[in-house]
Each structure stands twice: as structure tokens, then as C-alpha cells.
Image 1 (cartoon, rainbow, N blue to C red):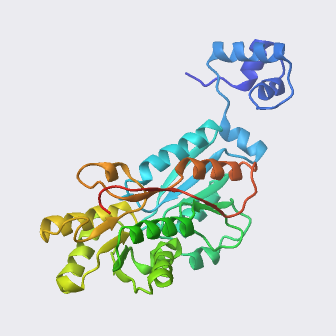
Image 2: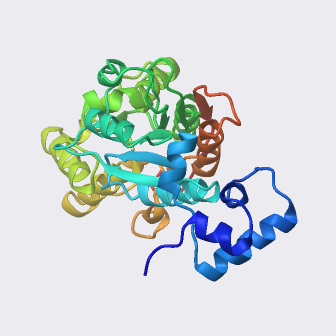
Length: 330
């Protein structure tokens, strides 16, 4: 069946084609009577506006590219659900792009620009500021927004959890519990430095106890990588020299570390080694882990991102406090 056009709806309703267009344009000037006639005719003919054609006239596609590079992190899915729901509530469509070894951020941004998306949201950990700062695609493309990590690129606002507050709250909690030999497990330094969590945790312990931070590196953000890093550390470190608390850059690494600490080495959490995560993912509160973690202000971050994207809020880097969730692992 041939798709109904605006011209056919106009003929059915007895109005001009431009009246039909105004009836489907939010905020356009049109009388209620004319709009009612157009909507009735559109319903009869099963007409839906051609958004592609409209984008040529308005220079807006109402599409937002969302770049994700860390699909192994279970924190990503509920965050994406909230982000896409918020975009859809504003009449915007999220275009999800999987960043991987074969399709990097630069390729994705160039491709998104060619598709004339209205904005690009970087939701991940692997991009490097220096790479994106050298933007071969220039400054005239779709505006960039960084969500859930820091960003030092001029003109690119980041909407993220306040790392300073988070690491201070976690550190204070651990001090009151009597821990004195801290460790920190992060992803590869080239990828995780900009997140700031390791750096702030390290600064806290130097300031408060003049303690050196044992740094443990995982190759990637996954349960297996957390397990591998914890296993390597425990194998090479004598029992009397081990840390008494392990802060992990996210919950996924913490899950892997806890599995090895308890199952392979027979150590107790938290009596022998306490473990803390970050994100408060779905499994963090399960009896298996009962993980102390830090909950990111997900809803507030999504709201701020969409408000900036729509021009309702100043486009500046924004740090939002989260919430410490204390459980039995510490």
C-alpha cells in the first residue's frame, strides 16, 4: 500500500499542505479547529509525518548518537535505559553505537556527523581526551557531551558523579572501620586516569595517614579481569604484607576480586581483606557479594544531560554528588 502524503491529508481535510505540516509541528501556529480536521484526516488515511523530509527543512533530525565502549559493565544497561527513556520523552531517538577495537570513537563521531545527528553523547571509559581534542572533523559538527566520566576537552561538557566527594566519603568510612593498608584496582592506566578515582583515593590516604596506595591494574573492566588482577597480586604478595582493604574502580572488578579472595585463597571479606566497589550495580546488594559501593546519581545525570542537549541548561561540566552504600564487605 502506498504511503499517504501530506498533500493527500490536506485534500481530505480541505486545508493547505502547510496547515498539515503545522498541525504536526510542536508549537506551530494553528487553530484548534484546523488541527482537529487535519488529525482526523490523518487518522483516516493512516498518515505519519516523514521525519527525514522534515529534517531537511528544519536542519534537525531529532536523533542523538550514544557511543558506548564498555558493554561488560552491568551498570551500563540501566543507565542506558534511563537515558534513552528521557530522550524519547522529549521526542528524540537514541542511535546506539558500539565502540570496539574495529570501530573507534573518531570513526563513530565522523559517521554520526555525516548522519546529521543533533548531538553525540560519549558514554564510556576508553576514549582519550588528547585523541578527541585533535578533532579532524572540526568544531562545526554535532555538539559532544560526556556522561559518567570526566573530560578535559574545551567546549565539551562532562556530566558526572563528583569524584572528590565520593572518594572522601569512601575514605572516611574506611578510616572509621580501622583499615590502614589500602589498595586500588583500576583498568589500564591509559584508560582510567581521567576517571580520577584512583588519583583522589591516593591523595586521601597520603593526606590522612601518609599511607602509600598499592595500585593493582586490570587489563579491562570485567569480572574475569578483576579476578586475574587479584590473583596475580595475592600470588606475589606474602600474607603479612598484603593490603587490608581493596577499593575497586567499579563493581565489576570488585566481584572478580572477591571471588578470588574467598574461593581461591580462603580469605574472609572483610576480616582479612575488605572490598569496596563503585556504581551500585544490581548484584552489589546480593547475599553473594553484599558489596559496599558508591551509587552514581544516575537520574540527575540523565536529566542534566538532556537539559543541556535541549538548551535548557548551560553547557558546562557538571559534578553531581552520589551516595555511599555501606554493606558487609567493609
